Image (tube, rainbow, N blue to C red; front, side, top):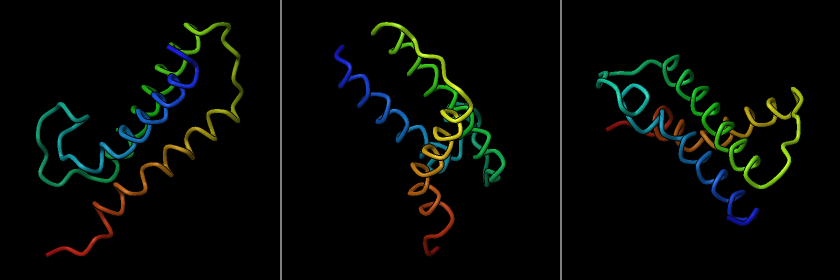
Length: 99
């Protein structure tokens, strides 16, 4: 897989996983159905999905060549990116007009 394709794969995966906690009422998208899932559960799922994105990115980076060590700044930016990508799902869940 080319480096450009792996970058797009990680970005697409991040966008999908960032919105997943807000579009489903299931715990971690596979677990039991919860009627109204609390915001704390959704944020915990978002944090877990951020870890999945990190693991996939590290896996693709290791397959492409030498892995670069990351500092805390990288993880802070990644968390901000995941929160930004989760905004459409948050708006759909909490800010849209209810019927």
